[in-house]
Amino acid sequence: MSRNDAIHQSRLNQTFAYQILAGTRRASRDKLLQLAFGMQLGIRDTSELLERGGACRLRPDCRRDLIVAYALHHGMGIEQCDDLLWAHGERTIMPGKSRGDHRSQDRPQ
Image 1 (tube, rainbow, N blue to C red):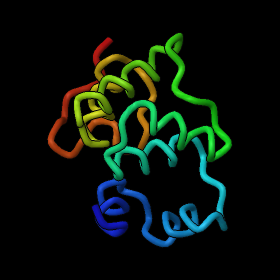
Image 2 (cartoon, rainbow, N blue to C red; image 1 turned 90 degrees about the horizontal axis):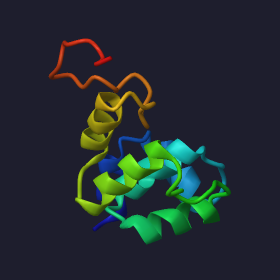
Image 3 (cartoon, one colour; image 1 turned 90 degrees about the vertical axis):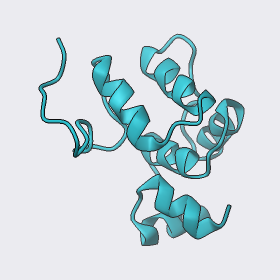
Image 4 (tube, helix red, strand yellow; image 1 turned 120 degrees about the vertical axis):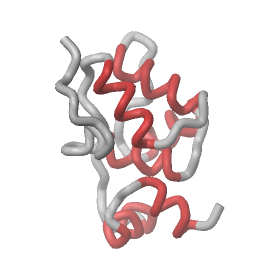
């Protein structure tokens, strides 16, 4: 996969993503997760990316992290992961993108 494709699939701003990859900008945990989805990483590689980026690894005792790990394991994209997180009442990875453009229903209770 090319770097451009990974950045595009991560849904990050291209300039910001290149700065993260070059090490000139520090990214939040969620931005690193976006990169992991863009690069189609597995659970182990995602945890390593998070750790190298200064964030905690995916934790098995955290419901949100378990949902993220499930999405990674099943090869889902960032949008599908956010839909899963939203459906389970968890904070999404991409702020403002939680409901998806295709849905108009309210968050399940």
